[in-house]
Length: 112
Length: 175
Image (cartoon, rainbow over all chains, first blue to last red):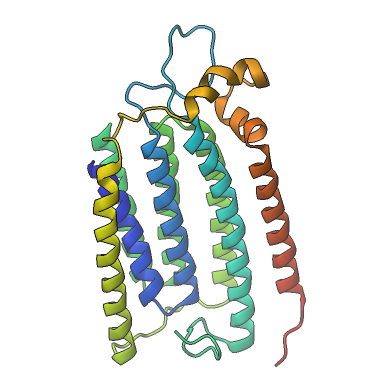
């Protein structure tokens, strides 16, 4: 049970950074930290004690596999996370070139 | 097993906290890399080799993008002094966190304890993947066969993001 709680603490650290930081780069980092905590939580839920990796082999008799469904979904989510991070970084560098700062309070129309 | 994972997660939390408080943006980005690469080790321990491979590739690409952005702009962290807005933000964050803790406590009671997951939906997949799809790897069987439309949507999102990044970086902004 302690691992679930630690995952949740990691999520809270990301959330705290997302709300309180003013630097765009740090906001993007906080978002990816939140993403990572959700990935690890989903894979933890699908883990079975004594299970083996979900790859079928003739040699193992009567195997117990860990749940392949959360792993497949997290695989999709990881790739989408890369796409969103790249997009956010592109927007951040555009904003820096226009305003000369990463501070979201100095950037007009993006107050927070 | 649970102890090893707890130590790794503790490292991840320390790395995350350092990333949020670093004075240099480059060290913040590298500290975010600690979190990503510890995640790879966690995936390997949790018997998810496909995820570990994908995560190590994705984390490397993300780090390269972030380091490129930081080197191309500025490494200085903003000098933040505590003002009224900052206090409002911090108290908002604490309120959000307390609300989430409340829901988390309710959600954790419905979960099975760690390591005692029972296959419900996936039991059909586990039994039939090898014969139905011909794939020895259950994860790729689920991803590309049973849930092929999800993967199609994922490819669409990747394509859209690539087009978006190209568009954002190409246009000339108004001064």
